Image 1: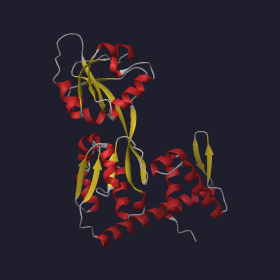
Image 2: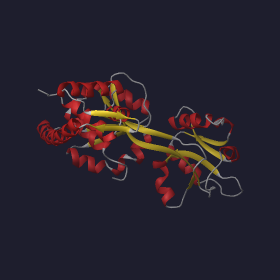
Image 3: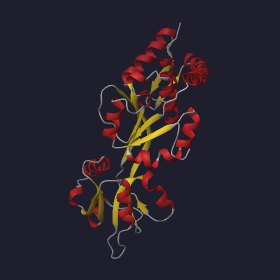
Image 4: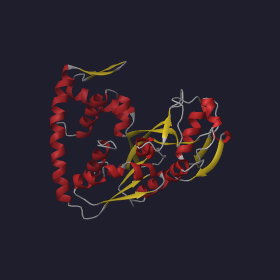
Length: 301
């Protein structure tokens, strides 16, 4: 008898994502593990359930029948988890560790809803990604939300929310900026060991640009500091003062017309935020509840 709900969850994720590789990122497991679990289901049913195509996957007739059954079972499991959480009756505050961009600019939009969804007090600990993961391993926090995966043993990483670094200024910018024009701007930059600076350097390096050769006016150690420095920069002269920050950090100012952004021709500074928790807690109903809630939320949801 099939009692391993994890394999059915993997199957549902493969169907939803239409890809084995995307499902592995969402589930925080390797792609071979996803393939192995689907193979186990096919062996159990003695029928193929998924056909892999160049542009995704399709379900066989047996796969479609299993999908309908798995959806019903998933709803039942969700209801049971809610009952289990009520029984657990957590009295301790649930602690989420978040890196700065997420803690300051993403979580505030869903924190109250999260408290209501889990019927529990939530504390947010904002720090660097490295320190947040250290606290997770030391069991000082229950769940981590970080901007860039930092290698640690004993943790599960789940790809969550897409982010992008955006070129912005307090002055009007061209509709599209050419990479070679970046040398003509005044720059406010993050420190070299920050994830923002490392991502920028990596993308710029693909077209032969070096951050250290830009005209850097200041190096600032926080996103808020960078944003405020650019906002207060002089607008006199023909040389705009610019920087790169997460779209979430400057979204409100862009919408209010206080800042201006422009794409850089041929360059994209994309990354994914991740939900992270200890492997030893992967079957913890409370962790699953919070993780699923966050994974299902966008910033404005």
